[in-house]
Amino acid sequence: MSQDVSIEVVNNQKGFEAFIRFPFQLYKNNPYWVPPIIKDELETIDPQKNPVYQNADARFFLARKNGKIVGRTAALVNWLEVRQLGKKKMRFGWFDVIDDLAVTKALFEAAEAFGKEHQLDYAEGPCGFSNLDKAGLLIYGFDEVSTMITLYNAPYYRQHLEALGYEMQAKWVEYEIKIPDFETSPEKVKRFSELVMNRHQLRLIRFQSTQQIIAYVDEMFKLLDQTYNKLQTYVPVQDYQIENYKKRFLPYVNPNYIKCIVNKEGALIAFSIIMPSFARALQKINGRVGLLGYYHLYKALRKNDKASFYLIGISPDFQNKGLTAIIFDEMQKLFNKMHLSTVETNPELEENTAIQALWKNYEHRLHKKRATFSKSLK
Image (cartoon, rainbow, N blue to C red):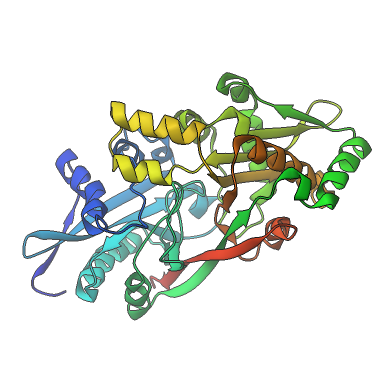
C-alpha cells in the first residue's frame, strides 16, 4: 500500500454519508453521470433499513490520500448465494475511485481480506446485494447518459481492475430503441399480437392506479424467478426483499407503463415494467428530494419523450409463443399516446439472446456494454 493512502472501515453515520457522497464530488462535472437519491442509497446500505441483511453481510471502505477521500468500495456476501447455490462469492460494489491505481489496490486489499475472512473462494463485481440492485462496470458507452437503474464509471476503472488481476466475467448489453408511430410500426407485430391473444385465450390487464398494481406485485416476482433463474448471476429474491422493493420503487411507477397478461384462468403469465426516464430529473435534483425535487420527478413521470425498459417476465410455459408481440404492440400504443420516441433497455446478459431478439423488428443500436470482473481469493 502506498504510504500516503489510508483505508478506513465505515462504521458511523458521518462515514456512511461521506461514503455515499463521494461520487457526487468525483463526477460533479460529468454530463453522463446520473446522481442517485442520497436517502435511498443510505437506506440501502443501512442494516436497520434494508431487510437484505437478514441473509447478507457487508463492510464498507473509504480510501483517503493526504487526508482527502479519493475512493470507496463495499465488500458484500449474500449467504443465499453461498449456501443455497453453492457459489462462495464475495460481491464488491459501490466502487468509485480517482485515477490512481495505488488507491484502488489499497481498497481491494481491504475488500479481499473481508472475503478471505468469510472463507469465500472468489470476488466478483461491481454489483449489489441481489439481482435487482445496480450491477456491471461500464466498458463501452462512456458518452451516453446513464439511467436511474444503472451504474456509471470512467474508462480507467477497468484498467485498474485488470491491473489487479481481475478478469471479465458476466457481460451485459444495452440497447436504445426508436419507436415509430403506430401506422408505420412493424405490421407483423400488430397482426401476431392479436393472433397470439386469441389462440391462447389471453387477456391484457391495463392499470389506472398504483393501488391496482399492488395486487399483482408478488405474482410478478414469482414470475421473475421462473424467467431468470437459469441465468448465471441469478439469486432468488426473498419475500421481505419484495416488500422493500415495493416501498422503494412503486412511487416512481406510472401505472400506464405496466402491463400484465393473464391466461383464461386469470393466472399471471407475463408482465412488462417500463419506467419514464428519470435521468435528467435526477441530474437536476442532484441527490436531494425536496419540494423542487418532487416537482422534477413528477414532471418526468408524467411528461417525457424517453423511457426505460425495466423488467419483462414470461412464464416458461409461454416463452417462445409470441407473447412479446403482445407486449410490444401495447408498448407501441402507449408510447405513441404518451409521445415517447425512444426507449432504453435495462442491462441484459449477453447470453440472454431470447430477450435481445425482441428488438429485431425496430430501429435499434447497441449503445452500452458492461461487465462484472472476477478474481480468485485463494
